Amino acid sequence: MVKLTEDMKDVMEKTRGYAIATCTKNGIPNVVPIHFIKILSDDEIMMADIFMKKSFENIQQNPVMAISVWDWDVKPRKGYQFKGIPRIETSGKIYDMAVEMVKAEKPDLTAKSAIVVKITDIFVTTPGPDAGKNVEEIS
Ligand SMILES: Cc1cc2nc3c(=O)[nH]c(=O)nc-3n(C[C@H](O)[C@H](O)[C@H](O)COP(=O)(O)O)c2cc1C
Image 1 (cartoon, rainbow, N blue to C red):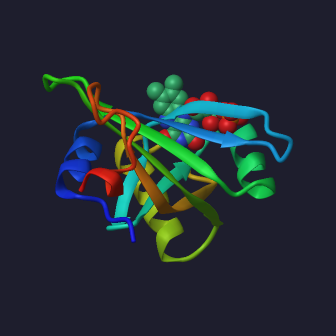
Image 2 (cartoon, protein in one colour):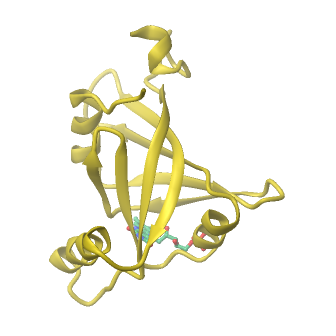
Image 3 (cartoon, rainbow, N blue to C red):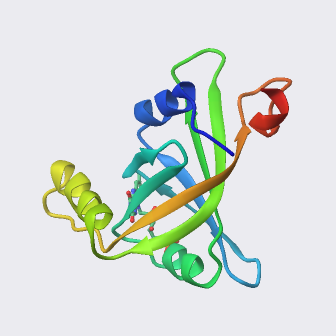
């Protein structure tokens, strides 16, 4: 079972943005930058959907996602890639959290939905001998 480590959480808390990738059911990829992401638990994260169009359609038709996050401020640079299964929430506690997260920083914006991603695999992207490895291979 995958688990976000303190080191991964630290990278996520420090970052100002993530790259999130989705895919149509025919395999056409789509990658966009996302700022509003919150860690929900050791294996779930949530992102606020404010402007998503292709990403949202892709999640509906092909619920798979890859998320890349990195820390530019440490040397050597450090990064992780998360793969997981997204689900869409448009009401309830987690959706309300997404709305609040966005409003706290950008009062004029409203989250249309919360995308909750259950993380299934974690890979290292830190440059070096472990780059690309599943964390389970190296722990
Ligand atoms: C720096 C940056 C941060 C962004 N953060 C968010 C975000 O937190 N939530 C969101 O829905 N869109 C965000 N966007 C917009 C998305 O990247 C993207 O443009 C939007 O989701 C539409 O793309 P799509 O149709 O491929 O999904 C951000 C864009 C930039 C440039």
